[in-house]
Length: 134
Image: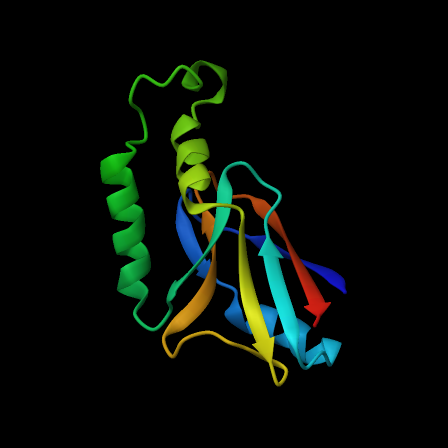
């Protein structure tokens, strides 16, 4: 089963918790066992799994990424559209995550959540969710 959702991001860089949306897609599918793939088809966004309890962690992740990959650092790609940093960050985070499904529940850890990582917003982002029965 393949579904998609759209998210309108509000900031240039942000992490948006999408866990509840993914859980609803899984619930609606009725699939009890298998895997769930969450994928973004964008070169300046990514998907990650991390703590979703403390929103300060999201800010910390973006701040540290900006320390390592500054917004402007004489990137050659910036001559095209001034967003090289966002491509580099998205490459490090990655475009997808795979989560095991057991008893129609995502097997996330106690504090884990799934987040869309926006590095070149605000934009409208599409997220594909593929649930494979297994």
